[in-house]
Length: 255
Image (cartoon, rainbow, N blue to C red; front, side):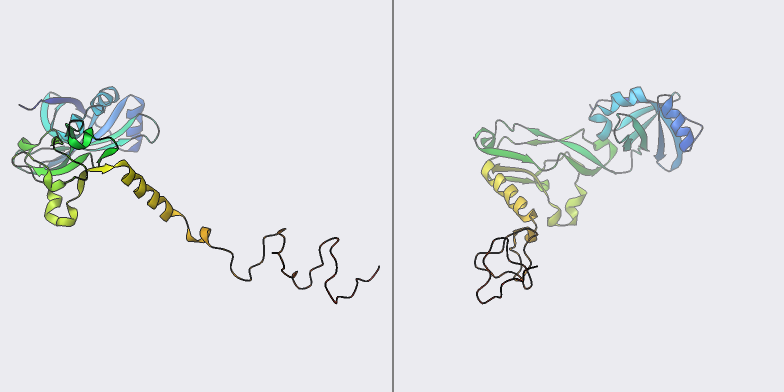
C-alpha cells in the first residue's frame, strides 16, 4: 500500500504582489490550487512546513493529501519557485487530482545493484546516469513513487534506453510514441579513457579556428616586433639604431 503524505495549507483572502510579499515576511508561502474542473483557489502554507516537505522526494512525484481548513484534497505539486540565492520558497502551484483522469508527471529513477553488476566490478569503467527522472502517463492510482532500474546484468559498453525500463502496469512513457529518436539513453557503461577522449574532443572543437591560424601574408607585424630575418624594412622606415645603411643608399644628411 502506498504511503499517504499529508501537507497542511489554508485559504488566503488577499492576492497580488503586495499581499504575497507581506505573506513571505510573515513566514508564509503563497500558493494556488487549480484543476478538476473547479475554480482556482488562493492558498498559503507555512515556510517552515514547506522547507520540511521540499527536502523529500515524495513532495515532487506522488499524490499529496492536502488538508485545507478541515477538508482533504488529493493534489500534485506542479511548480515550485525558489529565491535566486536564499533558501526561501517563493510560490507553489498545486493541481487537484481526479481519480478518472490520466496525468503526466515526472517521477525519479532509482538505480539498483550498480556495484554488483559486471560493469560495476571492472576497474577503469564508469557508469553514466544520463537522466535521473522520467515523465510518465497514467491514472492517479497507478502512479509509482519511483521507477526502479535493476543494473545487476549491466556489462561494459551496454546502453539502456527508455524503452528498456520496466514500468508498473498501467504506466507508459508518452515520449516513446513520438518515434525512435525520442528513445533516449538512460544508462551507459563506458571505459573511463573513452569518456576522457570524448571530453577532449569536445574541448578541442570549442577552440576558435582563428586562434590556430598564422598571420595573413603581408599582414603588419605586431607593434615593437623585429622584422623577420633577411626581410627588408618597411618602405620609408628608418634603419635600426646603429645599423649600417643599405647597399647603394646615400648617407643620411647631417643636421
